[in-house]
Image (cartoon, rainbow, N blue to C red; front, side, top):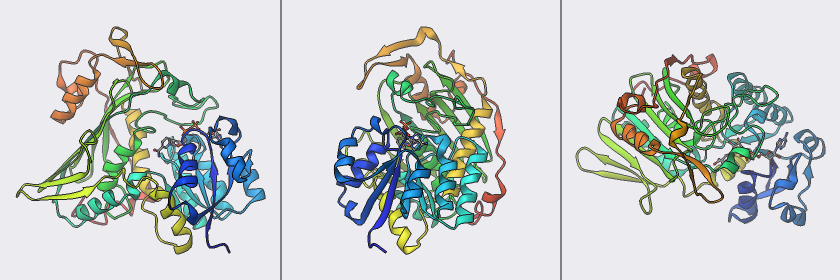
Length: 413
Ligand SMILES: NC(=O)c1ccc[n+]([C@@H]2O[C@H](COP(=O)([O-])OP(=O)(O)OC[C@H]3O[C@@H](n4cnc5c(N)ncnc54)[C@H](O)[C@@H]3O)[C@@H](O)[C@H]2O)c1
């Protein structure tokens, strides 16, 4: 057996290009033997010539790759609705998986991934890079140790503006179901900014590599672009034990902001604000002390090396599939909370300039979300936003497979 872990990459365009850069240029890359790739449409990948030059074979499908090669770890950087079938195929072939976030677009797919992991005894990790970072692991360690006391309210606001070209880049963007009927629930909550909702559920998880599922979710879902699903949202999760989790995410505010995190505990307030230079997670204790945890963006490629190392060591993943399930449950509940999402008013639409192209922005959205974030309420609860409307409170049923992991540390929940 080769010393270096043999790795295959499935999906080489889109975010796959980030993996290619990491596999080619990261100082830790020589630890791995990148020996195969699969993509039915490789021509979209801007590093195609480089891949060919170094002689990594590209197969038209995962099935073909597995027929011809025997990797030890497969990275799945493919559309959300393919995660379940590809994870099952890889694990059945005896291969460990690092699947890009989110876990899935529906509950059946999510549970299929968890079953695939259990039945094959192969590690399946979900690529929420913050969860693999030293900053989040250290912070979580102190939360679990009770340093901050009871978690009262965790809130995050993120604005990732997205141009028209983003909403035209593939057949599943902005869809509830794909054209052939598979659930995908593509939205900022389930895709581009999924990390930051997951991060709050993960920090509240009762052990170092679990997350906590909400007891109930209330959502406000807003649509600015001409898509099937929503592109701006505000969510409130009522967590078991009484913690409140608030999440504000926008694709239609023309300035990038956040993820701005503000976590209120009984004994400390923990903040992260990337608009500050050298932003780090910092805990400010009510007795005047501070603790600094670093930035979770400092070691974004850590997930690759940790998953590869685990193939040899057998060590547990920082973000196994079941740790990503509470996020999926939240996404599904948010959709049920407001099945008829609100179209933001045409009169508020603006065309804003953005690199790499123009985008549709909404006047007043930034102000409404900012104020709601500051006050710790949903936008409709501000009472003066004419377009705002509340969804219903949806109870979350926790699947059997997750129940055992939800209350190992009653101090925290
Ligand atoms: N971790 C992050 O920060 C981050 C950032 C962006 C995207 N993502 C995730 O990465 C995944 C891919 O997103 P994207 O925006 O790159 O999507 P995309 O649709 O732009 O690209 C997907 C790639 O998969 C390929 N593909 C499609 N069907 C395939 C199949 N059957 N077998 C093999 N390859 C296939 C496509 O040809 C394309 O190269 C999603 O899960 C997304 O949420 C993660």
